[in-house]
Image 1 (spheres, rainbow, N blue to C red):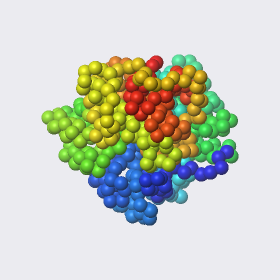
Image 2 (image 1 turned 60 degrees about the horizontal axis):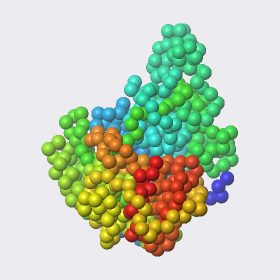
Image 3 (image 1 turned 135 degrees about the vertical axis):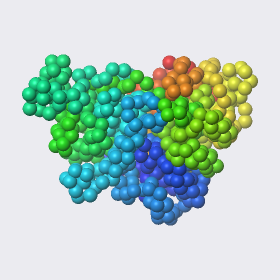
Image 4 (image 1 turned 135 degrees about the horizontal axis):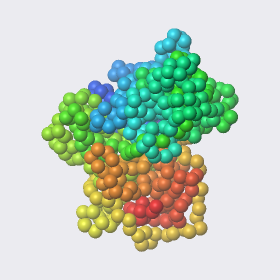
Length: 575
């Protein structure tokens, strides 16, 4: 049992850092109107240090806030609709497929789901939307609890949210409560039957159950009841619900989680932290939904959709003759001038909208095809990433110095030097890393072509005896305050070897690399990744780590900051 409360920062609960206070502003689905985006920029310039960070949940973060500015910050956010409920400030964590409704892919436009779920999360009135106050406990969710609304393409379904909705081709949704989907797949869930179909089958067989339980036709002879087990939903199962019921069903899944937390006597913040004997089960959640009048059909297995690629930088053609622009932010941070350009283009594009992504990027909808190249040129000229072959993609870093007192190095400057060295190598036509003067994240180039694997640099010291066992992943979900970690392009990253214009991947993917200032490695990616850990003011230990307990998979190599690019390039070619 935890002995402390969730310390996750918000717009009202600020986090004290070495460079001033930090505010994390929840933006459900990353959806901002141009007016809201402009207001965020003014808050950052007038109250903070002038820069904005985008987090791994598509939220906005303002750093460098002065002591005593909390009341003014909150008032400004309320005025623009960015703080609709003080009580629910930190629980509005919703990621959504950022290209939903823009590129003709996916099975549904989940923007409406985002709005409905956000309204449900903020409704703790005594009567509630169904007249029973059924959602009033939701203000008790941890600031780390996460909802994911996937339009069927599989991008945010892979992010390991606590509650996930996946749109299906028949207009419904699969509701999951647990971690990421167990693996890729293209088939609909085996044994799954949409509630509308199940109801018809029930009527056809004169079964009394409106979901067809007792009618064997709907599961190929097994019967839907055989799919409702007392096992945890974390194994890959889920519940099929109607599309119109999906947002409320997701909110009720969170209520079921809170019930299990209370029964367990623990202080679990995430679904995966529940003791096995108190896990959220298919039966338990189905019963709660039934009590709320929501029909649900259990499914045995919900494989990940065929493509889980985040949006690649560049133009994204849409079915309506308009283009969206996908932009990545180097190390997830923008200057005041860069943000002003983004908000100006959001208004110019016609959609009057800006979408922040969980991969620390931005999507601008609504451009005419003839206007998209000019807008992308402006964005590239401002130092933002607009092509899928940028060496910035897949590169991440924690806050580092000077913002974090625990960091041993200015990891963001060293990451920028690393990218600049790769860019110089490309410009020289060698395909190899060329060391040079350090660049800042705002000025380092983000040019084309892949990062080639190279040998460890001269002077690098291999330590074959070293087998650090990294503690369980420490990020905003595990008790440590996430104060600005980034992986541009997501985890796994966009491939620098080429990405199709529709967001699909072309060519092999290098491993993501994460530069950390201390052994906490706050916010490092999951799966296989390259760990560049600061071991002093000017030194790093580079290791490939794997999904199994974050254990090292290669011998570590100790290098200087100047040698970091070569060592990381070699490690990223490791499989």
